[in-house]
Amino acid sequence: MFSGKNELEKNVMDKIKTGRVKLRSRYVFLAEKLGLGSALALSFMLAALFFSLFLSYLKASDNLVF
Image (cartoon, rainbow, N blue to C red; front, top):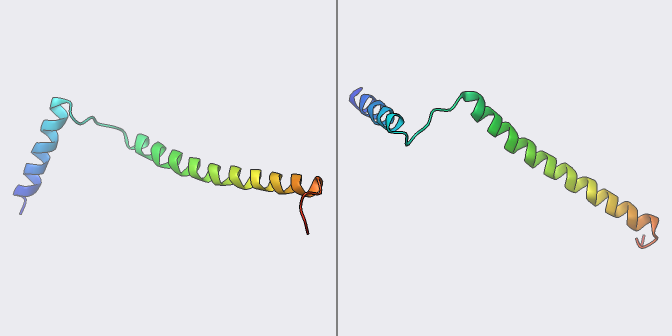
């Protein structure tokens, strides 16, 4: 039962020692996760802002038919 875990651990350690896999801090993973989520949220907020500005421009210039 534990032989698979030991084999997996050995394989991972071999990859780390050869340099094919690099250790990274958990904070790097957290920063990447928050960065991608924040970028997506910021994109949606900016899209909503520009859409609102576009509609207000159309209303102010009388190009928006009610």
